[in-house]
Amino acid sequence: MPVDSADVVIIGGGVSGLSSAYFLAKAGKDVVVVEKGTVGSEASGRSGGMISERVGESPLVPLAVESLNIWAGLDDELGYPTEFTHHGRLQVAVTEEQMDEVFSERDAAFAHGINVDQLDPSEMRDMIPGLSEKALVGVFFPNGGHANPQRTVQAFAWALQDMKGRLYQNTAVTGMKVADGRVSSVETSAGTIEAETVVAAAGPQTALLAEMVDVHVPAAPARVEMLATAPLEPLFKIALVGNGLYGRQAARGNLLFGGGPHEWADVGLTTDPDKPNTPLIRNIARRLAELLPGAADVPVIRSWAGVVEQCPDYLPIIDFLDSPSNYVVVTASAHGFGLAPATGKAASDLVLHGESSIDISGLGLRRFDNVGTGWRDERGWIPAPEQPAAH
Ligand SMILES: Cc1cc2nc3c(=O)[nH]c(=O)nc-3n(C[C@H](O)[C@H](O)[C@H](O)COP(=O)(O)OP(=O)(O)OC[C@H]3O[C@@H](n4cnc5c(N)ncnc54)[C@H](O)[C@@H]3O)c2cc1C
Image (cartoon, rainbow, N blue to C red):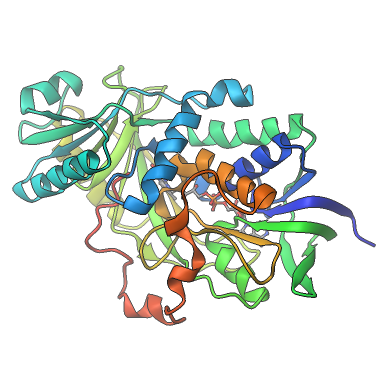
């Protein structure tokens, strides 16, 4: 006997799954979310909270721009606070090499018709008290921002429940039944849930779920690390990227900063993945002290890691598959927090209309048709040595 049935069963109670669930419930669908832990207990609750237009990744720009539009009204939309602040994002270069990255972001923004301002060192120091004397040049994106990941996940979850969406926490998906080319039900640790449509938004486990329905999703798990300092007086409200770091000052005053490189990790289908910190945290602390010497003596009080999934091109997958014909894959890559409102909208569009109102044409699974199962091993020990993991 099934324990439940729904129009749409969403696997994963992270920010992508909950955003998808919210927009589907808002459109009148009967929605169930199945989460093996508690909402946001994996990458989504551990995120840096940075939100940007992702100008360096052309296929993502329409999604990222639409996401920022949704973020601007999200607290009112959901009826709960996300702590979204919209004061812009500054990308700073403190070395000659980083200047190339900054200029390439500036040029990419212009190419997408997005206005940015180039700032000199004194303008940057007005914006960020305590910024390094070594800061050479910066580009300011007026539209960037950040939000509190824990509050955001909770806001989506509560808003979903307000619309009678059902949330099964501490419930793991263990299998799927496929009949006539469709997933007919999802097997969970609480019993069988019948589904008209399934949205798999299970973070790094999305690839393992896909294997159950004979689909190869080349999204491999990687560890991302962050630290928090003791609270400081209010210094800046913008999102700050520089010296291989990204971060913000939280509402309580803590500086929250993270950066790469991201090492590959491993996950099981139903277990909590290991996510220890590594000596990378010391390196992040050093880079933060270089970037903000004014904060160099402030103690680091916490550090943590989370596991994200990375595709060969570091971009998400949002796709309604041909087979099984009622199965939507949603992966977020390493920057899915900022994108999540639009990701959820796009996923709900796919379920409701078979196509997305936001241009996600560059994010289909078919772009990996020629990628074999051994691609991760061919990359070496870290997914993207050349990427500073800037958000
Ligand atoms: C330290 C860190 C910093 C980051 N900083 C930023 C940032 O500043 N900006 C940004 O945009 N992004 C950032 N990211 C990335 C961002 O957090 C993720 O891309 C995003 O949260 C992914 O959301 P998700 O819902 O797709 O996946 P997840 O949050 O991983 O959610 C998937 C959920 O599926 C559940 N699940 C898995 N398997 C099963 C199963 N078998 N049954 C039931 N449930 C299952 C998991 O428990 C999990 O809760 C960061 C990530 C980390 C770890």
